[in-house]
Length: 167
Image 1 (cartoon, rainbow, N blue to C red):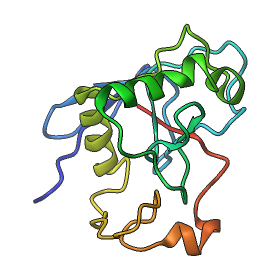
Image 2 (image 1 turned 180 degrees about the horizontal axis):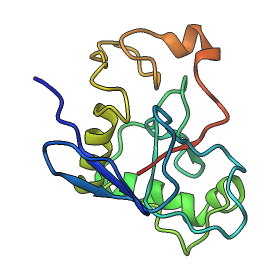
Image 3 (image 1 turned 180 degrees about the vertical axis):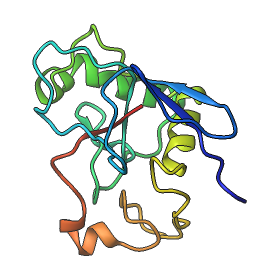
């Protein structure tokens, strides 16, 4: 069906639409068509960022040193408790050295409401605008869509971006 636009309110900025739905966000209004992503080292030390961050790809790496990278074999065959413990490693394990996270952060498995926000926004004009294909690949590589795009064309995947979208 047709995509419904949403209203995003930035600190003193509002973009209106007929639905009247609002998503609150504190920060500087992006330029038209701009999607902001965080690359390692782009924010000032100690800067508080409102919102939450979601890994762009499935968990990769290992149980003790998880990552979220394209063109990798994802961590599989875990129960909910196992994935919960792996996600916590971003705070207490490798996150302290690789991502700069500490126990003050709340790295965790994504909640239904967080997943809903990511899915809704990524499908809107602020994300891919509904242009997504079904991942019909039978391989287990992350980020390849219906083919092994990131396996055969690794340059398409931005390896320097680890924790992606701020919502």
